[in-house]
Image 1 (tube, rainbow over the protein chains, first blue to last red):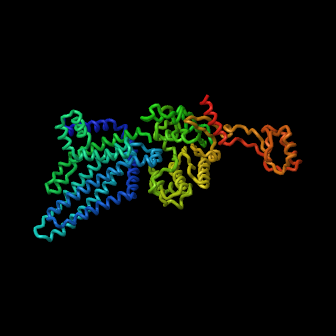
Image 2 (image 1 turned 135 degrees about the vertical axis):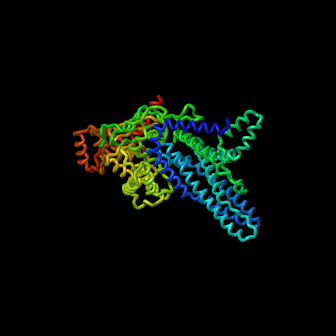
Image 3 (image 1 turned 45 degrees about the horizontal axis):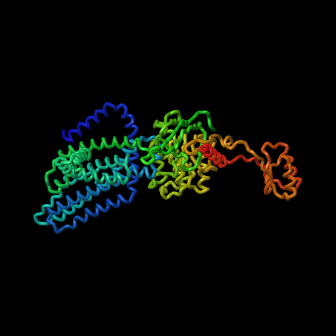
Length: 297
Length: 316
């Protein structure tokens, strides 16, 4: 049985259990939606007023704009460099911001004790966790959209410049760029959910360190799989296999290489990671809610 | 005014904090029994670390008890609907500091599902109740300690709660701020709210509370009305001036007088007719009577006595 099949079977079981027990959780969910939304909104509003996030986004925008200065490259090379570098910047800074936003999302509320006034109201703990997560997703979506729009703008402006050159082959491939950015956002969403889960049981430092490890392992899943297949020490083999099964396969969301090298992208190839990603998020958020429910604040 | 209906009932509540380094655990609350009646202002007083805040956190579902039960309005504290009737003022006003008073109240009111119109009305009402109408747009982080505390009280009132739980409401406030907060608590009491208040400012407790529970080392070591705790007055005190040394000696010989020092005449509290004869004697001796009082022991005296008694009982 492949890990993907095992995951899908697991997801199917969860869905069946949820459907069978809907009478227990559906009324609670209906009551929960307004609270979740209000907590998400205040999370977004709070992040909007924090200068650090704005500073990082401005930095990325400047990096993207500065990439247009490589005018000594051929138009095609320049296009490749812009798309590849731009998407890499969106991925790296998107993930870094996701780690720092998500790792502090709940611990900060506990440290500042702002959680007291919220949990003393008729708010279930899962509503708080899910609300914070959705708030983080909205912030990260705004950041990824901003960076993608800037990248597209840079590509369009550059396209105008090189069109006047003889035998221009700039080909900005905007549709592919948007597709890669959307897939990148889903990778961020999966990682954010996992960080929120870890932050419900671990300290902030531990969460940040774990997030970086998960990012590294998740981005190198095919290498991990190869290492697991060739490992001779049983413990190493077992650990690598567990890492391969548990850690989300973030590299499956990475279409940067195809888009920047003008390889035709099969959009249907996105379905598999997307379905897995959504299933992963649901399971992880259920676990995060269970862990936070038992936490003494 | 307090009625007979019990609003808050705590039975055998115990909380033990355990960690890797303290497997035996630290008992923060030890077999606590307590009840608060409707309309009553009940204060839990005790030194730092006596288990007051831990008890409040258990009642709010922020931490979980090791043993015992607690119910509010007859429902177990784990029941979420209980929190629709509770307002909580945390110690040190922990609210989001990037928002102003108006935004904060709108957010907290939203958690109760109120419509936009109702939230706006509530925000106006509460800001004027706590005297923050003029400063409604000031970000929380720029507010003074007193303003923060008043905003925190306003957020505790967004649902018009029947039971208010106040944790150290005057902690860190200057005398003017403390007086303002005490006035607000008295106003809420006048409106019929049941109030559970934790504090170690005994003067404030004396001013607002109907009943007091003294907590020490996680246990309730004394409980009752201020009168019950203080007991009956033990002395009559007459403050005088203008009494010479010879007259003072003469007065000290009076059967009902327990002692005279610096113009203060002390008499047994059951003195009846003797009081008049002593007053007459002071007058005849050319002294001026400044004040006659039958002071009860202050809450501070009661508090110190209860703690000493508990400590000595434990030593035995």
